[in-house]
Image 1 (cartoon, helix red, strand yellow):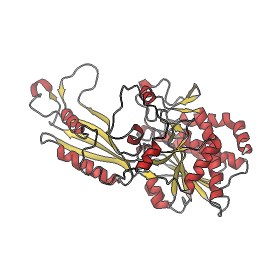
Image 2 (spheres, rainbow, N blue to C red):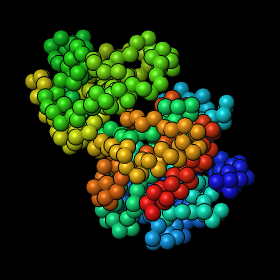
Image 3 (cartoon, rainbow, N blue to C red):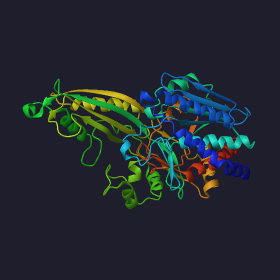
Image 4 (spheres, helix red, strand yellow):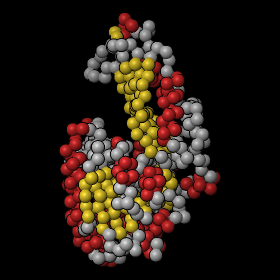
Length: 456
């Protein structure tokens, strides 16, 4: 609608300035030293929702970081959309690889560079500004609720209890999430699913203290060597995961679905060039898009032990550590996979070491049916703003709370992401295109309009 465009054009500079203010807050949920920053960011989110026109806004304390809830109920007969997002961000390390301060946002070549620019401050804030657009122009066609949490990057460990305790407050007809990506702005897409997650930490202990590697080397098992051998054994020559039972519940994609996925524009040369690699790696028998969308994976996220400081220290370490994550596909349950991984690691650990495995967090995969009203409204909204229909794709990332949303609230989720896979999520120099930010604000009101019409 023209009234939306006019309002957005008149206020676009303010929209951006408000986002930059939020990006300056180092709301790193994983680190206790940022507790006050988390509270400050929650307060800012509350203020912006109030200014946008929410009739009720409240910050709820949790045993971890707070949850912000807001609503604008216009007519009980209208459908209700629950918007989910998160204001916490990943740690910015390694700092030396950033071209500018991670919490000192810089705009360069039409892109905002800052931690959280895309994941997820920039994306959830599109919804706040789209909401403001509709409220201030008197065109809000639905009831809207917001739930913006501060623990997504650490597994949403307290959000599940919050949802169960506030089931009536959060009652809605659909959940709308922008924490995913598109193929490109030239080839708009909608994620019709996200993978699940199982995340664990492994500790291998050998001798009761660090040893002189000359005196004891060759006589005592080195925990780093043992851990490396164990990890290497988790994939076979075809890069197939070797853990017994790992694939038992995997829902195999049909040939028709794989054929649809193959229609998505993809250049292997451009993919490799963007990543700076000479060749790709993955499970035999599957394309790159299939490996990152419809197949489960096991990845090493970090490994450490012994001496890693400057210079040399000839030490045989007492301990070695690793962090491992598994991405899961439909029908796999994160609790089952976590148990399988732990059991296998404990079984293959040799007698010269002891092993301790600690589960961190997880979540189940989720798929949105493409024949649902929710998806159709999103697809129509994309077509209205981009001039072409979106391509349905499977997302490789995880939003652990999504499956729980449906099981507790009984409604479907739509992923309406405007980021790009190349936006350096979880990496140095995270970015978000200004075009994408404003395109999201332009598109989201169309979703609400079409969804309201389809639900009549």
